[in-house]
Image (cartoon, rainbow, N blue to C red; front, side, top):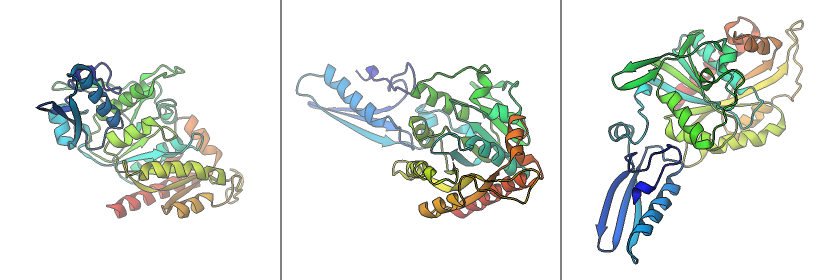
Length: 348
């Protein structure tokens, strides 16, 4: 009967095949089923509990009493029982940090890519997973559009080798899609693909693995933060007051009692405009210090303020991140990286 209950996020597999049925006990007319979930609770747990109960009632005699219990297994148990994807490729990653935003258009991917490069400039071993499944921009911003990651066989597992450039290991859904091709995926399929992209990559030893998350606060985000051992997140915003509601959504998601991830700080992007011919001038197009006020309002650090500089956009479009430069915009990203390292060390 429990073979009828399929996990929506794991296509064509039921909860028995996935090793999620920990125990079935029958005592008279009472059936007790214990379901096992990962350490970070499955976002579909309640759905699976109710589906299991319904499946038993359909097949059991009238008057049967059904109870569904749940247990949480640690990462090591996941591997032994095949309950979840193998976390082994993350064993040598010291810090996994999401780069998030409440909405699109704030330059989140620009911040993520340049933050990764800036951390590498500081001497850290860095990787970045582009989890923005509906708009993967990392290949364009790193000049790796024409590259395809290789696969290697290790025992009975096939692992993906990340693309290395600028001292950073890059992985993106965009590497596997044809240029200009839209990825039309429903939520569970997208969640599965993203987790596979992160967990089946041979990252090796890393100080930081950044995850460029999709904008917003939907199912994909919840799945990522619960199923990937993410330590915390950085939130990207713009300074105008209207962005406050979007920041609040992101903050509330990470602070939710079922998620509880550290917010290392806020990054204010597009803080001011500086013309190339007047490098000392600052024009506050979207308002002044809005990010600072948001950070104070939510009691999180302001990690950095990144100006609107034409070279940042040009470098991103040309596949050469601005953080590589010695210009003021490059220095701003290095300062951001330094502040993130301090925030992570303080939180430990």
